[in-house]
Amino acid sequence: MGIGDLQIFATVAAFIAFIGVAWWAYSPKNKKRFEEDAQLALDDEHIQSLSDEQRNKDKP
Image 1 (cartoon, one colour):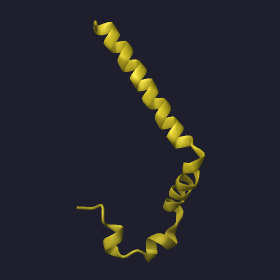
Image 2 (cartoon, one colour):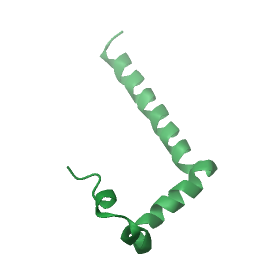
Image 3 (cartoon, helix red, strand yellow):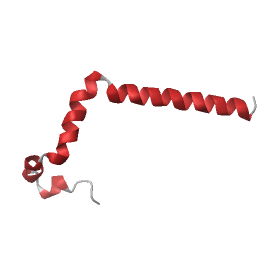
Image 4 (spheres, one colour):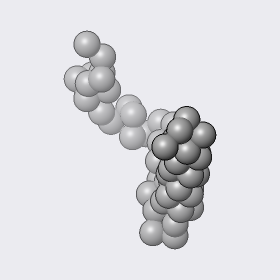
């Protein structure tokens, strides 16, 4: 098994991973979740209703 075989294996593995991620991202069962997540940035009412602790939970 030479370097060429390893490169072929890595290319095929990366392509399969890409197809898997694309399938997951565009699957109909995730459509509603992604549409809701896309609206989070535009939903000011939701952000204003959160406490300071909830809004800053990701900050150290």
